[in-house]
Image 1 (cartoon, rainbow, N blue to C red):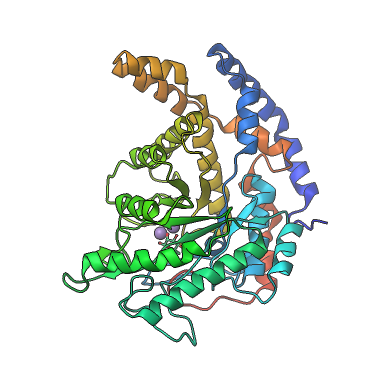
Image 2: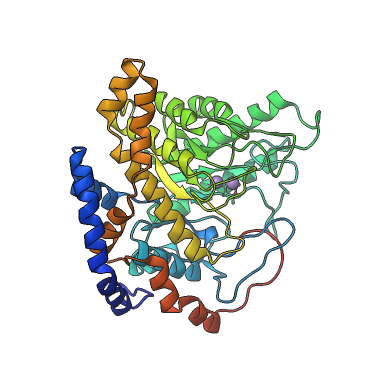
Length: 430
Ligand code: RM4
Ligand code: MN
Ligand code: MN
């Protein structure tokens, strides 16, 4: 039994109004692609099976350390967040799973939560642990670190929390644990850079030992914030070394905002895959650092190049290719539902464009050292407007051709503003 939040009649009415124009655009694009030997329906079929998870913590308005500006009707608990994620999936059809964060999404009955999600057409993706904040009543503070803390009892508390997340995840149907820690330093000399990594590895091994056979532990690196001089898992190098030390179920997770400025992220993707350690992504965009802006809003070309490497990896799976895709954004000035609808579309567009790359032409040009034609193979795909393919796949799956129009017409947010309690002021996400 599903109980979806947006009226199916509204979606059908609007799709009826847009259908003829879409069929026109789809046919024109189909003819253009056919001239290049590409079957548009085959690309549409690929797009239809593509999915990316949405973060439960992205459903509410985010903020900065300066302020947060809530909007009426935003969710304040996991039940309301699930309902909002169901809107995104119902209209967009590419986000069937939610990635929960604990303890933010803690409930007393996870079996019931899983059923609640299923009734909304949703499942669960990776569970995320949180040892970067103290919680009320917590025995040991994370002020000096968690998995890498000097204090053994603090490290054990962080390990226990991660193991609890695995237990919760089992009940929710997850098979990945994402571990990002805020551990690091703000001053040179504050901690021994070598010994803090040793402590991290020893604690992470205890979590690893608790992973079920079919689970993965996704290590997420981040160069700075909240620590501004050093972080314990600062870059993809530290991440892959830790993953190699832990074992085959440990993989690296690439958050697009967690690198040094101007780093070649697509090359990192290729490297991690080369060594069988590419575990997943947190998609977002950034101008300066971990800005958590909407995917594709700042640098859509980089996003395309990342997907181009993913397409290469898929064609050449080496030690398996099964990265988990998630959005990880902070929606500070938009309605989070609108941002995630738009972001999921940007991500899927880059996936579709990467699928259009003429790989034979690209590889031949690479072999012949024909730089310009190699570049043009990518350029042709990047310059193709794939919007009709996505819209057609969405419509056929029951979603809306124009997702933002349908969302606004539904007046979902203003309806929720009548029902939901207002969010308190204050900074930060949850
Ligand atoms: C971090 C990192 C983690 C996310 C938290 C909320 O910067 O991206 O993935 O769980 O933010
Ligand atoms: Mn992240
Ligand atoms: Mn981040």
